[in-house]
Image (cartoon, rainbow, N blue to C red; front, side, top):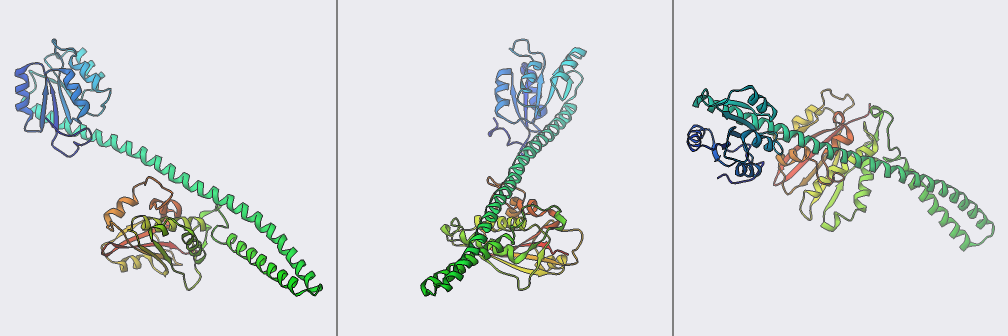
Length: 410
């Protein structure tokens, strides 16, 4: 008997089910089919049905006329089609009538073999073709199921972007309202300071000056935040969107400094700054989102106490930069045309628990359980494949270097 359940037989030895109520025919079929694969023969349709429900069969050879049994061959195949649409079934009979042919078509039989007219070699070739047909059907079924699952994950991932944008918009509205109120408070503080000077009271004057300084600092910080990466949550034209790289890095720095999730695991993030001010051709929020996912992916994949380093730099020619990275490497979303203004390269290094290129390749194309954090898919989803080139290079001892290259705004 064959060990293992359904879904495990795609690359193993073919499993062939034979349903035949005559002992002499069973012996003949066994001798004919054993050179092809593993043969499981049954004379009872009910037992055969139980077997095929628990095993992934590559082909079924079914006798149509079984007068002593509860089911005939056509009824058996009809029952199988209730839970397995993919297995290719060859129906065998001595009857060549048109009615039987119609019945075979109805239950989606793969072929009909007339016992007196089908040679051993023909049956073997027919069975080999049935096995290939079954496996091809199963691949298509599984690909379709995977596509549906991936689509669901994609919708969830895209939904998380919408959630972030919605939350960001709400926060922005709140902060705008607070800035308006602070502006009014700043005007009041200015008046209070002038009145305190007229009263010739040193303590009152000092308190008024300190109040004025604090309010103006709060107003300045809030204005800087609103003019930074989160100033706009949507872009009317993504081609014209731009982000100040240092402002985006500062937003990331503040985010990870305020996070307690990673500090609890003694993990840290070091984020550098460009010496010169550069503007990337990306929406500010989407740039921050993409970088955040890349950093969180490395944090999630690293051991306790790990450190992730992100250092930005200017790259004039992307193809030349990729060549300089060296082999072996992975390159995702390599652009077809160079950007004359150059690129900003966010070079991130981290020691991962499974720091292999194969693992990164899998994760780049796999949707995680929680797409809101550490999702490599979000690099392309947030920034767009034409604006997001990623090069991954192993540096030894589990250390990987990720180079996320974004074109500069013209």
